[in-house]
Image (cartoon, rainbow, N blue to C red; front, side):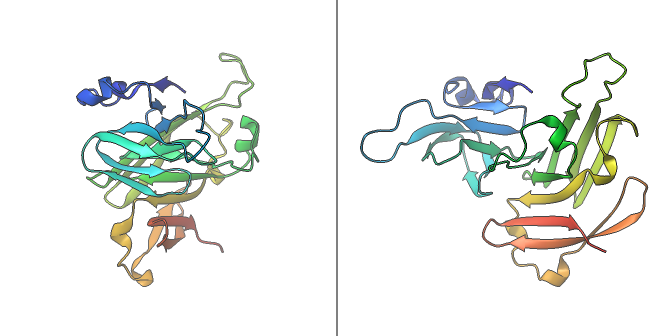
Length: 226
């Protein structure tokens, strides 16, 4: 995973070239705003972070930062670092605030939640490359998986381009849920109008439950229990 300045991802944004020291991208989907100074003796610490245009989702509380035009935004640091999901992105995400996971092998034993932040065209995409964190590349035990995620026109697709039944990714239990952040457009929909279904890895039809969270304006889709 790479840490890169915003200009690598927003090359047409002139201001991204002028504000490189106060923020960076983790991969190509998560914007991090680090705290680079000590807290004052009195009052709250405030930091300034540059945001390109778009709706950015705070991964700490799922709140949406609406940026109508590129600008510097004042942030008040809390217990956790600022990490915002970029518009048009899907990522696998465990908050891990309680430090439940400390090794890659632990993540491979549980299903993975996905978070999507649709852009203005109601699209989002992402990818995950995962190995066991131990085996050396090129060895017989090295069996990584490369997974792509796409969301478009109300459909979410998850597919692998690398990997097999012996790979580290346990396909049958891969997806725990999909949360669509920045989903205020669904606020007026009645519960009965929100429905989702899909296909598992073996093309069997499975039903999902759909729940809209008014506090975070997010829509969560989870496999229905038998």
